[in-house]
Amino acid sequence: MIYRIFLLLAGIGVTGLYVWAPGAKGFPQEESAKILFFHVPPAMLCPLFYLWGAVMSIRYLRTKDPRFDVRAVAAIEVGTLLCVLATLTGMVFARVQWGAFWEWDPRQTSIFIQLLIYAAYFALRYSFSNQERSRAYSAAYAIFAFPTVPFLIFALPRMVTFTLHGGANQAVVGGGLDPTYRSIFYTTLVVILLCFAWAYSLRVREGEEWLAKEESDGLATGGSDTADPGVVRPVRLRDDG
Amino acid sequence: MSLGWGAEVAAVVRKEFRVELRGRVGLYSTLVFAVGAVTALGLASVRGEPSPSLAAGLLWVAMLFACVVGLARTFLAEEEQGTGDLLRLIANPGPVFWGKAIFNFLLIVAVAGLVVPLFVLFVRVQVADVGLLVCGTLCGCAGLAAVLSMCGALASRATGRGLLTGVISLPLLLPVLAAGITALRGAFGDSVSESWGAVASLAGMAAAFFAIGPYLYAAVWKQ
Image (tube, rainbow over all chains, first blue to last red; front, side):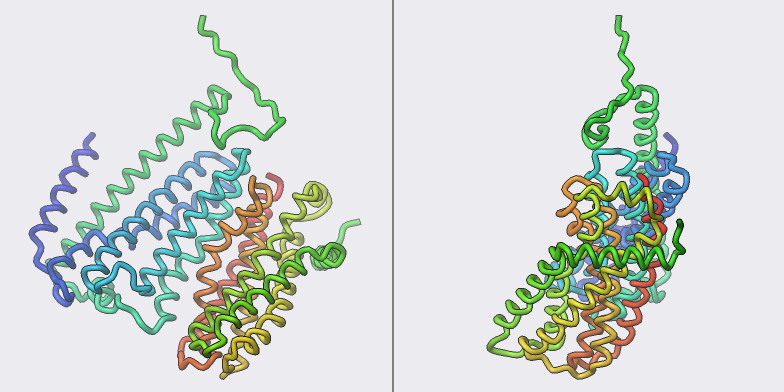
């Protein structure tokens, strides 16, 4: 409860800071460039969630403990949500600053490729009729896909000579933001991190409750979580009388 | 009698070649797709020579088109023919992965040996740096082989495995293609200083994929 109140107040505070902050110097449209408070943090945080997803996948493959799989899926879901947010806010940002929603800028391209790679994770995950196989194969994919993330963040943007992100990179990463702006930016980053960490913890709790229910029931709930065709699973008959 | 690691890998490569030479489904479908794709690209460039950047992109699209069809079959065929369980009984996962990945790499290099000269001939691009073309193509082939082998292995026991292989491998191949395009832009005459860096990135990515692939395959081998 305290955490929720804290997040609510933090959200109100960040919105207030967004309204109060002056326009971002160095951008063609200074006032609308303030969207960087909500565009850059998701782009910076989504690789962290993907990394956490890969770490949890490694732990799942080592221990076969489904709780690690729950954490891996939750991290990748939250990472993908951040990736979608970064892509969408980036498109709005691009429309205002560069005049078009999509410019094939290396950073735009790399975040979009990341999104596609992790969308494929879900395609693989829901393609198995056997739940344990689904967990193991999707964990393997999450680990296999992760090396592309540092490549897309660090190597790909340096391989392409043209970039429209040059000024923004210099401002955010190169320390070009003035102290007030930097304080607002890092406050927003922390608040967004806490919000998504909360979303992650909710998703983990939901997954663990589902696991506990499945263990106590021994019942499959349908969808992709049914046994292989021809496999008979133990079923406890409910005694309602 | 148990074989050593190297002998087991060699046995899997030999087995893949024998199976392929007996059936020739993968080989013929890959060749037809490769030649068909290059011919279509040649028809599209009848009235003009494409820029080095566009030519590099078109060449990798042709390679991708040819390889996605044939390469992932090595793992899928085991499950379709019901030989996967037998393989899991008598072999170790590491050598099986390496054997199939090496076979895939050799097949894709053979495809590149046909596609690249045909592309240069049909699309009429100027090769400015043969060394860069060869190194970029070989490293790109290694990346394609590593990703397609692993994705084929991951999709092999899923429902709708043929379609799924393409779905999960295409996004993972995009970083490989991005680096491959930068490498070949330089080979086709664009003055790009990053081309050799892109070749190094391709080699690094292929090495990373080949390094973790066998461990992951071993982890899901008996699932």
